[in-house]
Amino acid sequence: MNRYLCTLIALFLCIGSYAEKGNGCAKDTAKVQVREIRFNYMTKKFEDGIIDKLNINDWVQFVMTNIPGTKDSVVFQAEVEFANGHLEMGTQFGSFMNFNGGKENDGEVGTTESQAAAKAAAKAAIEKVDKETDSAREMINKLNLPESEVLRKTYLKGEDLRKDLNKMNNAKKLNTTTITKDLEIGVARNFIKQYIKSKHKEFAKLAEAAQEDVDWQKNLINLHQLNMQEGNRQKDSIIVSYAVKADTVREKGNGDYYFLPFKVQNFDNASINIKFLNKENLASQDLIIPFANKGGFKLDFSSGFVFNAIYDKEYVIVDAANGNVQIKDKNKELRFNTGLALMAHGYCRTGRFVNLGVTTGISYNLNVQNLNYLLGGSLLFGQDQRFIVTFGGMMGKSKILASHYTVDTDISQSQLTVQSAVPLVERLKISPFLGISYNLGLGTKTKKIKL
Image: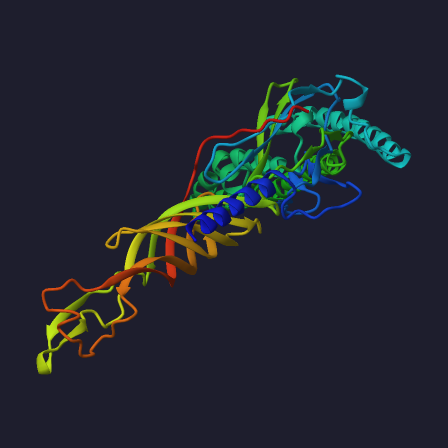
């Protein structure tokens, strides 16, 4: 019996290993389709929204869209890394790719005539906006306004420009209170009031005329302030309109770049790592896009504790009436045993936090000290690290009373005495079990694909 069980467990592990290396749970399709993941360089967003899962054995091509500037101004370093949650497994592709590195990687792969026309129109529109931006800069110079760093042609952004203009206007502190104070209008009014109350009529009349002149000057200051504020608002509006118009056109970009396609490998996770390098200002930026892989057969191993009902029965021989003896059961109540287990879990990835799998394994009970065989189902919780709850059936040996003896029955002392050993035999017993375990990282395996 043990040989049959060992053969079944070995067969399960072999099938799981073969399925893990092969297609496993992935669907078989006659025609290979390449899935595009398109990322907008200008908006820093995916065109199809959030993408968090990849299907095992699917072909994927990453496309960088709306790349600004000339094609030889940006350099990319890209790799895709595959890994299991508890192992350091990975593969990477790619190297430094320059836009002028060859026709096959010049950003024109897969473009149509309509796309080429759209790119040409966008490029012409950007050139037009650049001229308008230069005109706006000349206007700013004429107004003697400080040119902020945000007004540089490469980083012209409307929202940043609005913030900069607000800071500039606040720094000027142009208002009626400051101008009136600087011109000492209040001092002049207080001085004139003293002469209005003078007993000399001529001085009083002159003082009243002077007060009217001062009040008129104050009104002129208010009007001048309103005119200057309105002029500043118009200037700000013109500058911001150029910036917003430039943003709108620049988001269209002037080129797309197609990275080499890759096949999603049979691992738990994948991440696309891209490093941008702008050769004009040497600015760099890293982009890491993590994915949870879905599908593919996975074989995980775990160790932990199992709780079961396989244990040795305990009996005692006692004296009975008429010179006979009886066999009594010392532990009539239900008992549980605890053991250490090593289990293998086969399952198809869902790409979610919980996976459902089939489990087999062996356990060693602590008090009975025998080897047991496990078969059941498991819930695997987690992605990077997995805690596993398993429920199923366990088969193992336990000692029970020999079949020709019965508990609580009179037995002649010619067959059995109080000093005799209780007649026990070993039998295979099947019991339900509950297991709690943690997955193991056995060995280190890497798989690299050169593309």
